[in-house]
Length: 401
Image (tube, rainbow, N blue to C red; front, side, top):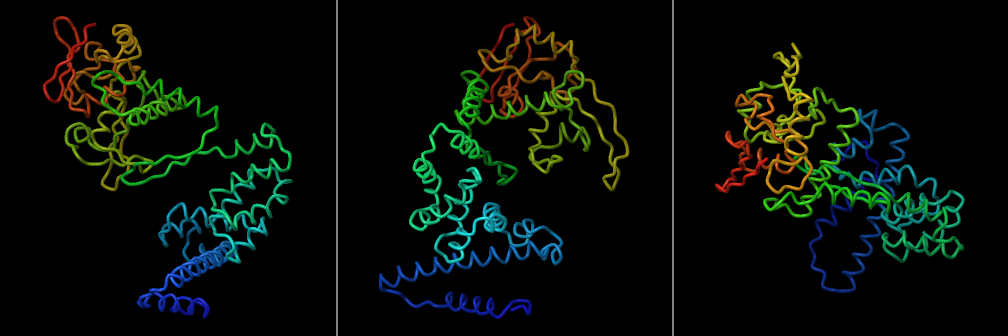
């Protein structure tokens, strides 16, 4: 044991090791239940002590002095604690001193850390003048109920105080419960969860319904997948109108720091790092670059920028408008009802396809994905100028202008 650890902590570690090594078979049902309850109480007590130690370390800047990083970074990176646990611990570190009754009950193992966090969350959604009045009642209720019941009990207390359900206090409390959490999982995937106000929830539901409509018979996405893709289109539309470059009408600009031939031809199964550390597949990069201006960047051996070239020739604003009018503002896939999103090169740029009106076809987001990643090909009949789609199993679909 390190010399920097107190005798009390050393004794605790020794007791835990002794408990771990105890392989005696317990056959008494009463003893099994009693020991489990005691262990839960001990766990809560240790968590309360840990919160106090973390608070002392925070106030003394001990983690920054010893490890050169924040307490949050230290817990996540050095101690490998889950983000949700780090958030709960730090919430207790900073908020518990303002709620002495909650702090005392947690310290005495009368309530768990989850109860403490739930009470703090519930109280902070109320006006300050009500918090002291309700804190004692919430602590007593937490001693006999799970943490998930705390929020509902607040409504009972407000009813007892004669506060109407339509009052400003109730309305502000509901507003404070709003929130969306976006977490990184693996390989750059994200998970999303949250609570929306009725107004935002209604607006989002309408937007998802509009942007997530099935694109036609070939659209085999589940409703959940269509809503995911629709959310991406909604985000893209917002970003496009709030500062994202749109030179010569292109919806995005791709700054390529690898050889263009590698991007368009050589990459197959690799993953590409974006500036924000997210990862996309090579196929996704090619699809995004299809309707983008590409700016070549020449890098030296140490990845230093040696030269930044001019944007390549892309469809002009006039060509984009002409293609939109020619195709009646519809996706080139027959029967598609989705809104157009990308002006696609029929002959891919990497195959020498020009930025010409005859080489342009407006596609919805789904069918643009289909022609790049879904195994379909799209050509134009040289005689009647109709669009001919060929599926991965040889199926054909045609749309006449």
